Image (cartoon, rainbow, N blue to C red; front, top):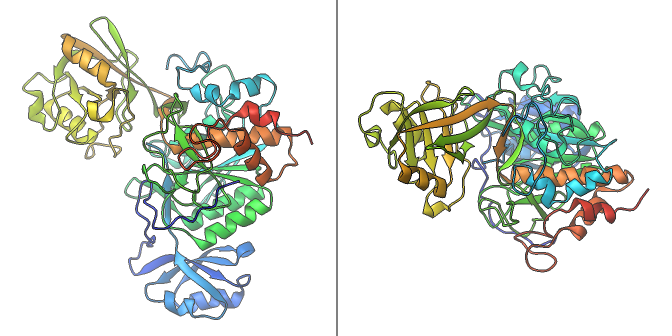
Length: 535
């Protein structure tokens, strides 16, 4: 089980600071009110009398999610039977090809499905363990429910944002560009074997999905703690044996912890990402004692630079450059061709797409690309080559775009290592104008391209339904998928039994037995199933 060491201090959050989420009216707050009893009509009336509204009730743990005028929290806190009043903190997603339509990617140690190899899920599946009969569930963003890797296993969804609580499909909701996260996570956990695309750790498990992170007016994606709780409770009510939560943010919530304790006691294993801050403590909800907390390693089983570590970390999974499903047209197949050499690339998040022919144009070395002037004066339509550093990726690509570039290439630098990287342009558009296609290269390939200085280059960023991504978000469904395989072999096991099996059989990576960097080690599907008793 989890090594219990008291962690002190306030957690540095994965993508946002932990603040109380305000309602659209700045004079009100969204709060969680905990009672020493199941909330009654009188409790609801007290909220109304204080000028507030009840947004959701969690009767099993004696909590109301409320919207209350500022300054009224103390009045409610002093009401008889109230145990606590706390902020309803924001949670966010935790995340940084060949012709996949015609054939299914075969996992290998050197491609985007390496996670199935390093966790020995390949051997587990070959032995007949596929998660059949198990409800393996995801609390996350909206989902591409019609994706070829997802549709065969998708059963039902729940949208906490409404108004149609049954619809979680990103295309129905018009959020395919911003809510790609759940499709990628779900593909890793249980992408179907169907002759195309990818497949996941537990390819025959059944998927129930709760949309608990939604696109906000500013284009960001998040959800309040109570909304996450509502979705997780719905998933548990559907009979989910394991719930994947690749999300985090905000401070500790007594209400949230109480709910997850109750759900775990009732028979559902909750698997949560540790966070992406390179911090020495986990983000919430990953820091709760009752959940199975997951950090990330790369294809060489080295700790991912972004992965949070700390006393509550249980186990690690593959979380660097994982290939998985993406909403149709939102994924990218990236590469660069120049001087008869093909360089493997990674797509920049939110960058524009190219046709299958790519963009073939004069190559211009724009240095660090800090300003449009760095590209010099050239006829519009060139391909800009820039080195990482000094300014953000978005600034570089915007500078190249302003100088007339039709595509941009950014390569790594010594400070960040020779390998390739997942970059983001942060926003869906460049000040309202679509971004040009932009891809990244390793330092070695970028420097080779710069030294060769070919007259022209072709940049490919082809729209597709698959994509590479990195984060503890990607590590977590690898672990949740193995848990589904274990439940598939013995559905009578309790959550703490499955957690104990996963930890006992993990591939040790650090200090013998447990350490706060890798937990008990890398999840090992084959060993876990060997240690799982038949019912």
